[in-house]
Image 1 (spheres, rainbow, N blue to C red):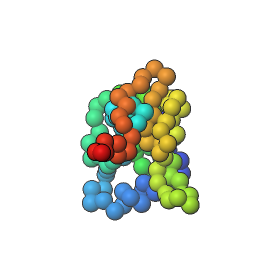
Image 2 (cartoon, one colour):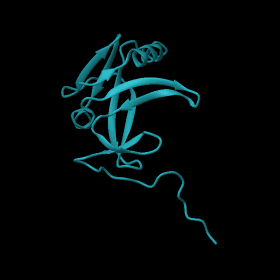
Image 3 (cartoon, rainbow, N blue to C red):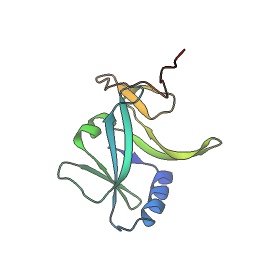
Image 4 (cartoon, one colour):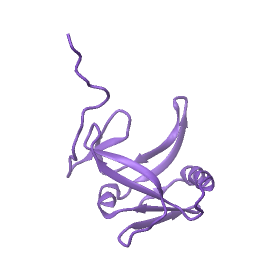
Length: 125
């Protein structure tokens, strides 16, 4: 199960209403990379695949592919506002380590493929 908070569902519904396609899904996925090995991704998708997991809250339909779901089972999508800004966050109970920005993680069973954080271009002397 993946939970979508009321705040996230409200914001997602607002974003969906600005799109030209009326029946879009929100797709949550995991990619290799980031400081810790895996990174979160989110985007609109018009197509549900046969093996996708489907979750719904407040009129928002969330799709998750099987590989991503394995790493996201039990997660919560929230929309948070703070003095530093606002945006979506993923609270993932499977993550044992996260990077400082919260967009990258690794699990106890899988490390992913970590990449250098930030701009680590070597300087010339």
